[in-house]
Image (cartoon, rainbow, N blue to C red):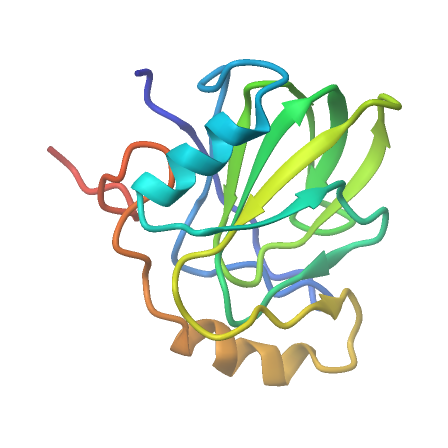
Length: 163
């Protein structure tokens, strides 16, 4: 399996992002049109699958939970990191791993988009919309969120440690 791309985003005053952990982007690691394969992979790596759906079209983040998004079917253009962040084109088989606080939103998608979401064990994910309200309080929750036991694709330590 190939190494993931790592993506880091600065706090923009509305989306805190994660000051320590990078987002991970795994391309083509799952078979297309097989949400059960995504769920099985996540479960094997201690990220219990939580839902099947899409991605919200507004900037939001989870200050108390890390999140994995597997594109099981279709394509999506997403923006990570807030308004000044990075737009990515994702296709079936791709997985994005978002550390607590990382902003994300859907910019567009194919009509057949299906995403499988997962979180490592912990409290129920809180959802915050981008904005000044609640931003400063989210910083403490992000800092208090423990690292997961590993990434949801390979099960290896995250953040990625030098070999």
